[in-house]
Length: 300
Image 1 (cartoon, rainbow, N blue to C red):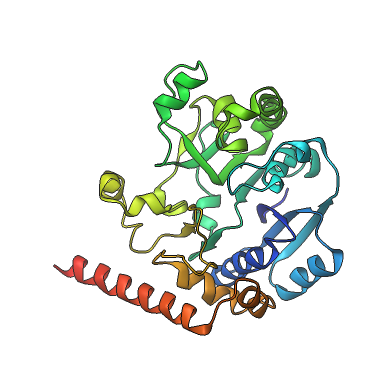
Image 2 (tube, one colour):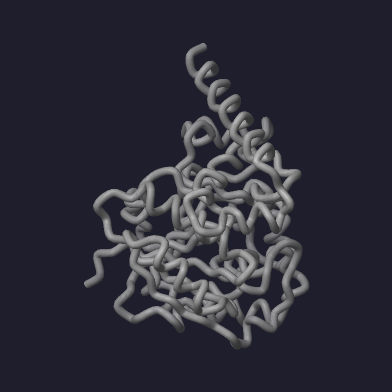
């Protein structure tokens, strides 16, 4: 019986620095719990993957270097790289005695321990996830000839009962759906998973996958259930413009830089994105202003 929190992440060479920022946030916010990172690597150089392992001695790692798999032949869509499809082969890679996993996208920063998420009771559902406010669930259902799903989840953060997923052949069925109808799935593997699950998933509090659109006035109905907009446990930078880019605007972008600064990749990202320290200072000031405004709203 494994008592570690089992986290699955997928990355390629380009996203390796951002993976390091995510890992630093996990390591900094963990308590006494043991955490194992299952890193599925799309053509990542062994020297750099070892650099990642060495940088985070409080985390345990299992590495799965992949150079060839049929899912890698699926086309990348929008800002979605081909590596994202590799999370659909977790049942092939992970040992049979791993019964439950948390999957995290790379464009994420955590701000608290993941113990509460890990202990969430799925009550017979295969997947626990947060709704995706950017997708019309009814339109998705009609497009794919499904009954009204009543909801559509964002796959950036998922708590998965891996035993149940294996029994239901969740991942092979999702891969099959992609090969049959890839062009009709706007959000790639996320669409495929929603298509296969067909609404049978547990909805998590938005604090576990706080996405950009939750800031918008039209989505304030979500916020009445939790103060996640003020201190989310997991921040997911879902927009096309990422926090490491010069034209980012996200009020939580500073937390990305704070975590990246503690990794060996900080200067690499500055150089590759042609950024200056003033860009990071602006991120900090935007974050500080946002947090101050949130406190003032609470006090009023």
